[in-house]
Length: 407
Image (cartoon, rainbow, N blue to C red):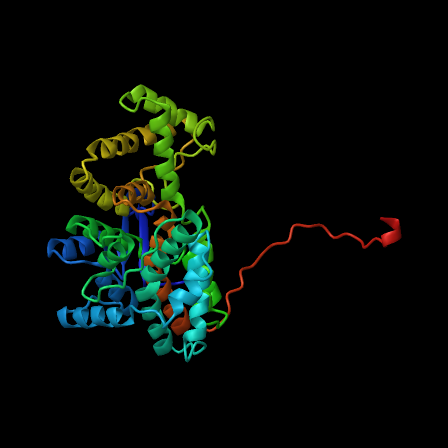
C-alpha cells in the first residue's frame, strides 16, 4: 500500500512492458535519482571515500562540487566531538549490555545538552542531524568499549577521533587498540556505509522516522524511535545471523562437499538445522527478486578483502552457498518471485573479515542509516502538515458487558 511520496531514494525490482505487464528485473537502488552503482564507481574510481559525499547527496538532493564536499567534510569533522564529560557521565558510568540500547539512551541524553532541542525548523533540524551523523561512530564504539570493560573485564581505551580522517577511517581508528587499519579495510567499510545509508521510505526504521516526525516531536526522540525499530532482529540483525549460520555450517558438515552443503540447506528450510527457523539467512528480499544491487557491489569488494586477509576459502564458501541456495529454495518452496543473495549475506562476511565484533554489526548499520533517517525527517517536516495515522479494521464482534458477579 502506498503511504507517501519521496524524492530521496527509489528501490526498483520490476520493469513494465509496453503492454502494461510487470516482470522482475535486476534490482536497482537510486539515491536522489542516481544509480548506486554509478555513485560507487564515481568515488571509488577516483580513489576517494564516498560516505560523506553520499550524506551530502541525501540531505541536499544534489552531488557536491569539490569545494562544497571539502566544506561539508570539514563541517562533519567540526561536529565530531561529544559534550564535555559526556563519555564519562553517560557512557562509562552506566555501561549497558546491548549496544543499540546504549546508542538510544545516548541519543536521548544529548537532548539535554542542546540549547535549542525542540525547534523543528529545517535549519535547526539540519544542524541536529549533522551533529548526530558525526557523533554516531563515537556513541557506538565508546558504548562497546564500555561494555567490554565493565562486563567482560577487558582493558578500557578511548581514542579521540582524528579530524583528518573519514567516517570509515575514524570507526576503525577509535575501535582498534592500536588505531591501525589498511587502506582496503577502510575503503570497504566506507563502501558498506554508502550501501546502507538509505533504502527507500518504506523500510521499518525510516517509516518510523516519518511517523514520529509527523507528530512534531524533537530530532532526538525521532532518531531514538528509529533506533528502536532497527534494534529488532527482523530489521537490523540479519547479517549477524548469516555469520552465525555459516559458523554452524562449518561445524556441522564438510563444507568441501557440495552434496553436504545442499543437504544442510535443505535441513535449514525444513527447520532441522541451525536455529530451526526454516530460513536460509541472507537469501531473498521483500522487494528485490532477481538481484540486490547492494549485494552485487559488496560481493566484488568482499572478494578483494578475502585476498588481503588470506580468507579466500571463506569467500569461496559464501560464493558457493549464494549459487546453491536459490536452487534449493526453488526446489523446496512454492516460488512467487525470484530469490538471490541480499546485502546482509555479504555485509556479515565483510564485517567478520574486518574483525568487527558482533555487538557492533547493527550499530554500524545505524551509523550509516542515520543519513537516510535525517533526509526523511527533513522531507517530512518540509512536505507534510498532518500527523500520520494508519487506518485499522477492527474484526472483533460486539459483545455485552457482564457484571463481575456473573462472570
